[in-house]
Length: 405
Image 1 (cartoon, one colour):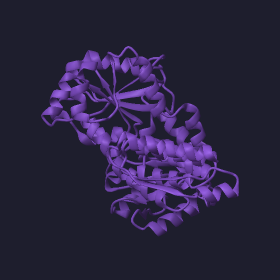
Image 2 (cartoon, one colour; image 1 turned 135 degrees about the vertical axis):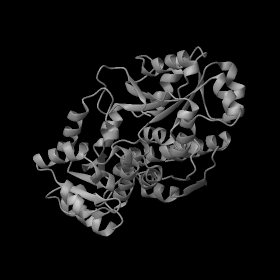
Image 3 (cartoon, rainbow, N blue to C red; image 1 turned 90 degrees about the horizontal axis):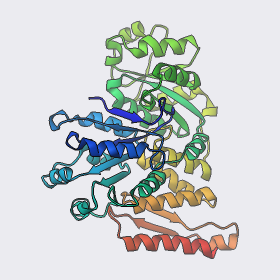
């Protein structure tokens, strides 16, 4: 089951942000209006909106999960029918998986009159309604708050030291993501961005984009599995031969146990792969092949903040909520403007109910006397639905501390 993708421009931008919307054929006209609003010039954004047209017996959770892994926002269209289904225990899969992946969710009510029933089902999760006379302004505001601007995305991309192109069989994207997690766990590898074909944008020339990405990468790594060796595929036909043709470094990684004779047959002249499980040898192999300049030996406040936002917003790397929070906490321990931005982002994570331990470090002064007086740590264990009064007090505490400096 493949998603349907819609975009505003005839040829969408190469790094278009992605939204997923829950779609219902029984309310198709309403959903079409929402999609038009999301892509409009005055209220929407230049993005790609994806959805699945499916019946209950057609639901494939893995297809939805794969689409959501590289999505910045899930838009939940709330109709009478959906609320009735939720009352019987049938929740939209997009919503359930988004909660699991800790993705931002924007509920849009078909009518204000649904609010009381909505609140019974969803609690205090903020929503907007199409019948609100300020709907389009509120939609624009929400999109601008949740989705990073093109300028910010460009700034984040400046922190990457290099890019690694990841080749894998489409059916095994979960194994590619497992590799990315192991790869970025290596010390110094956090700032190496990843390119894989889930970043392809519908409507563009995919082969041209793939070849450009291989050319721009520091190396190409191939996820070697029995499926990769079983039959002819796009990697063996196009990606690997093109990388060899332009002299690109190719690093094979054994994800599952394989036949090395079959590997040699499919990839003649390529050195044997290193197992993903042999992490010490694998790290050494990548250091040898991509070189020390790609590694980040130390991280300042700015780098930690931008990398934290990259992992939080899925900009150039896989989404990794836990890694994002750790990097933002590291940045927030400094004294710079980026440290303040990191602290604000952690507060926002807290305010939206993520289950993390939030640390706000109150130290934003160039004077050592002031630094000594404010080196206190607010440590809060966050609830899934924080009380609004506590949230307000947290914001006021940070604001008063900064004003006193």
